[in-house]
Image 1 (cartoon, one colour):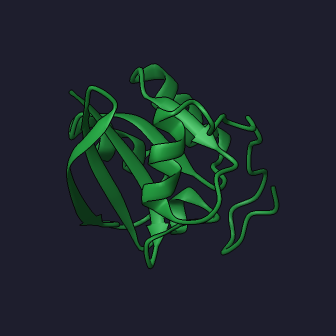
Image 2 (cartoon, helix red, strand yellow):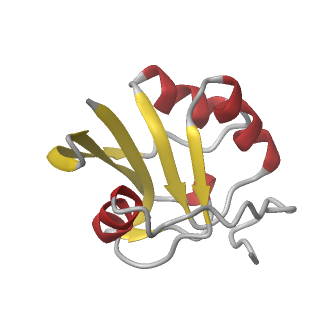
Amino acid sequence: MIKIAVASINGMVAEHFGHCEDFMVFDVENNEIVKSEVIENPGHRPGFLPNFLADRGVKVIISGGMGAGAINIFNARDVEVVVGALGDGKTAVLDYLQGYLKSTGEVCQHHNNDCDN
């Protein structure tokens, strides 16, 4: 089983990882979603959220944009980072599972309420 998280706002992929409302977490077996839950964002603090998710077994994080610090922590925790995603969160996971969703690799260079990718 693998856990995939999506930084989201109202079920849609959030533009910036740290400013999402919640995380949609999907348990996947044999490339199929077998369980899902929504975990409220406990708050944006430097370095906290990547460890928060990794500690819960997340192995893939999908977001619109993300800062280099978060990406580095995820990489150190062996969590795959997929940035540049848009649209419905569950659809993004299904696209990832089918190999259609690939990371753009773009890093957010500023920390305010939006992220221009």
